[in-house]
Image 1 (cartoon, one colour):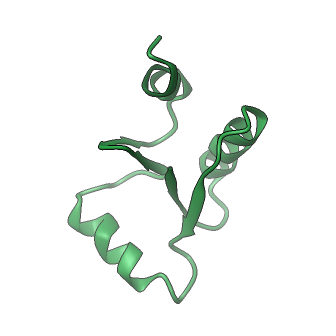
Image 2: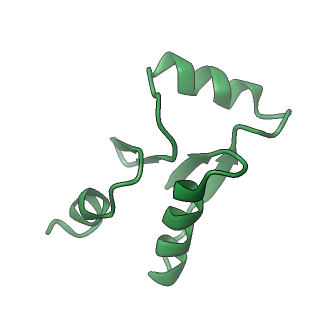
Length: 76
């Protein structure tokens, strides 16, 4: 699972805290970091406008929506 975030994003922090509490592994890509130029291009190319973006096994979730995230993760 990959999470696209940026510095000072409270929703990015909340999603990471949620995933940590469930012991779900993820890779965090911070768009604020200079070396993540390709990630910023990917973010724009996909048409995302909100953060965080969670990408996993063919699905993506844009923005902070724990109910939908749980549906994706657990099929609820």
